[in-house]
Amino acid sequence: MYDPLHDLSPGQSQPYPDSYWAAHSGPAPADDGALTQDCTVDVAIIGAGYTGLSAAYHLATEHGVKALVLEANQTAWGCSGRNAGFVLKSSGRKPYAQMQKQWGEAVMRGVYQEFNAGLDRVRQLISLGIDCDQQEPGYLRMAHKPSMVPTLQAQARLLQQTFGAEVELLSRSEVHQQYVADQQSFGALRFADAFGVNPLKLAWGYQQLARNAGVMIHTASPVQQWQTDGRTQVLHTPQAVVRARKVILATNGYTPKQLHPGVQSRTLPVLSQIIVTEPLSAAQLAACNLLTSQVVMDTRALKYYYRKLPDNRILFGGRGAITGRDAENPFYAERLLEVLKLSFPALHNLRYDYQWSGWICMSLDDIPHIYQADAHADVVYSMGYCGSGLSFSVQAGKRLADKVMGLTQPDLPLFQSALPKFPLAPLRRVGQWGYFHYGKLKDQWW
Ligand SMILES: Cc1cc2nc3c(=O)[nH]c(=O)nc-3n(C[C@H](O)[C@H](O)[C@H](O)COP(=O)(O)OP(=O)(O)OC[C@H]3O[C@@H](n4cnc5c(N)ncnc54)[C@H](O)[C@@H]3O)c2cc1C
Image 1 (cartoon, helix red, strand yellow):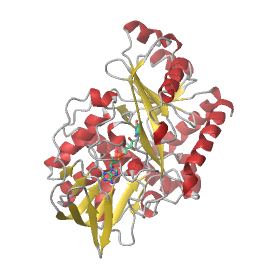
Image 2 (cartoon, rainbow, N blue to C red):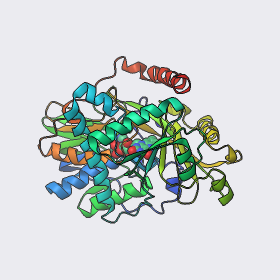
Image 3 (cartoon, rainbow, N blue to C red):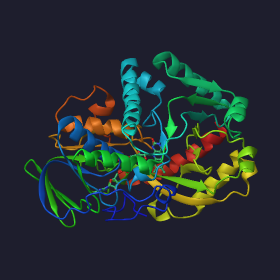
Image 4 (spheres, protein in one colour):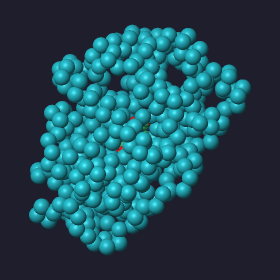
């Protein structure tokens, strides 16, 4: 599997992974095919995931700029077409309590508003006519051990008192009776405003909106070489060269090694793995009291997440392999199935029909950064959603569009500083391995 820390390119025209989404979304809508003629544009966007598509859409609809999108493989071939489809009001891994301590109340509120705006923006774009199999609203953050219940209580207080958020605490028996009899749940914090979608159909919907607004989306067009000629960015694809005044780098966890020095050694791509089981029978659903299609994630440092899909399968996810070379090893899918069965012992004979993985993008300081990669702000990026970018990527795309147009960005750490460099960058994977071991101990014992 493509490994961004080792490979110089994500390939060209690669098919989608064998995911449940690829098998259940129908034919891909038309795009503009490979770029075959040299051209000069105001804005080029590298990467056709949610970030790149949103930037293109907002540039066209709010600023009248028709950007050119270059995608190495297919639209949403990266994370955007292979994620779990949990549309949550969040990004990054930094808790609000920590933001409050480090940055103060006003900044914490500002970040919350940005994440909220991301969720609103997804809803608004869906309302323009995107069919993405939206499921019932609600997100259950499950306490995976009794000692996590006070943590959820503190989170509920902060969210209710500071933001007036619509959250409720549920006891273990309330969770078991009203939602799902998950044996690894000791209670939950329920957020009213999240929901599940088919992520690939969502991305295709964004593509359609952008193309309707006049954007050209060239798939099978990897940027293989990047030069700067004065203030012009020169992007080489296999069949044509693009000269652009500004470039938006929207490659996130799939950014190949050495694509641009401005983002080199500033992210850590980490594999997240998903399995989708065979459909559950009515008896199996009843045995787990699996009443809900709301999205579920636990409180572990090494999180597991799941949801019931419209055809009564369970999508279950968690961490995967460390390297791309090991990504296809069935051990990781089997491990997820074992954990699923700890939650639902009645499903001891259940098998999975689909398994795949993808590179989420971690930042050193646990927050995304929307910033410039060069001295002149001619190259800007948004990266580091830390595995939770489904809604925020769309807001980031809007901010990127504003940024290339020279508009002022909100005075928040997300927009005012570059992704910090990882110290000892060549050893990032060793650090990840160490964190996985620490996380395992923490989740079990502390
Ligand atoms: C298994 C998994 C589950 C997840 N679940 C959730 C979830 O439930 N909720 C949530 O909020 N987030 C989730 N995420 C994270 C979320 O999917 C991402 O944050 C989001 O999709 C990032 O979108 P993006 O557009 O920034 O990047 P991507 O969608 O990764 O797009 C980057 C694109 O850049 C292209 N590219 C790279 N290099 C080049 C080049 N040189 N030339 C041209 N193109 C290039 C790639 O081919 C790729 O298509 C999950 C991620 C994974 C992997």
